[in-house]
Image 1: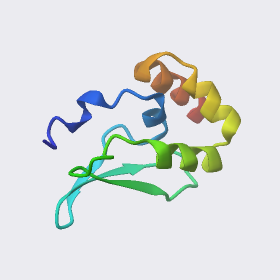
Image 2 (image 1 turned 135 degrees about the vertical axis):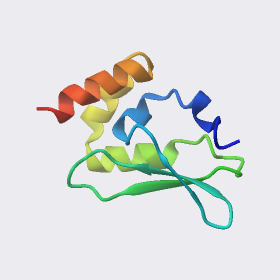
Image 3 (image 1 turned 180 degrees about the horizontal axis):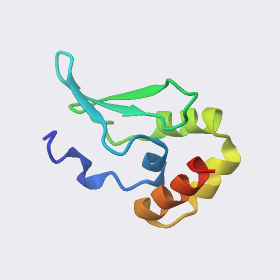
Length: 94
């Protein structure tokens, strides 16, 4: 389950987090996403055995607070995760 968990991670919101999440075992499988903003220490934890394991609501809330609504909306309009990652690379490297 964990090995193939990322096959459906296609939302542009993932562009704001480290490319490969950490997978940990804390009584059960947990996916750990780290925010890419240098000054941010926030991590998002997902329990991979939960029904809402595909929900990105908390990620959206964090990115809106951390990066701002304008950047969140701008990246959200970029088609596909690959395009969003390229756009984030341009933002981060400025």
